[in-house]
Image (tube, rainbow, N blue to C red; front, side, top):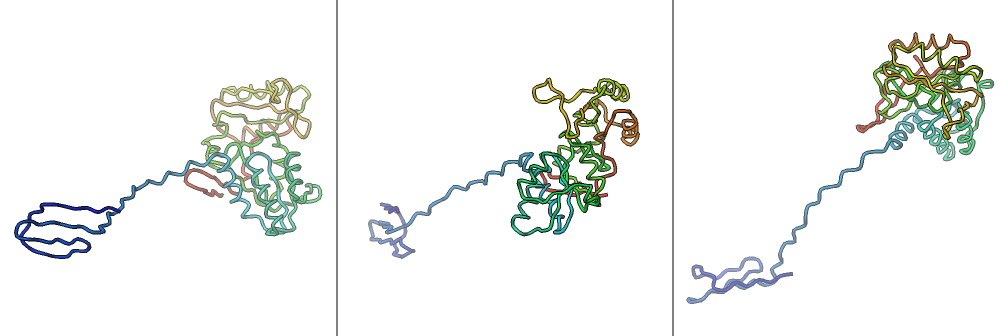
Length: 288
């Protein structure tokens, strides 16, 4: 609260009242008295701090929760493997626990997913007892313009492909970093599951098969960098690294499968019903 007084203010002789200001005049002096004049308080304008960009895990969670919106009570579900699929499995567990979903049966695609789903109280079964699956939800390592996929960097490609091929609908959940123009285009691994017997022989054949694409074949190792990684099916994985994207994925898949000792490859072709993509601008859905 401030009070101001002004002395020796020149003006024509007059006397008036304006709000809290009283001006009294005589023929020689004019004095302005301001009583209880409240000065306005000027607040500084603050610019809202922009929200930080979503992390990759937050984007994965958005895509996973969007996919789980398609889950209905009574469904048999294929439960995928990997960091993105884990968010979907977790959400299904939450909805079952809250009573918003019921009578769900899950078919896990790996031992890891089996353990996660069991801890969440999701009833589980196997393809032998439920050969027809209503919906499968899983992540992907690459998605091309035709919704073909590379999967299996988590090591579960064989069981994933078996479960997802048996599903009436297969929803793929990814963040936008997984989009490529051609499979193998990320420069990261395209896995091939092989029997342990003579794995070097098949590794050499795979590298030779794609030498024009600058392919390098490497046996997948555990974190110690020495011990071969062993799948849930007791096989090895040979990872193929391409300098140039695969030109004809269908032909590549057939050629890989024709090699004796190859169990399965990570090219998931013409399998996805729709792909849910979480990115900086939100969540989008692409369907065939």
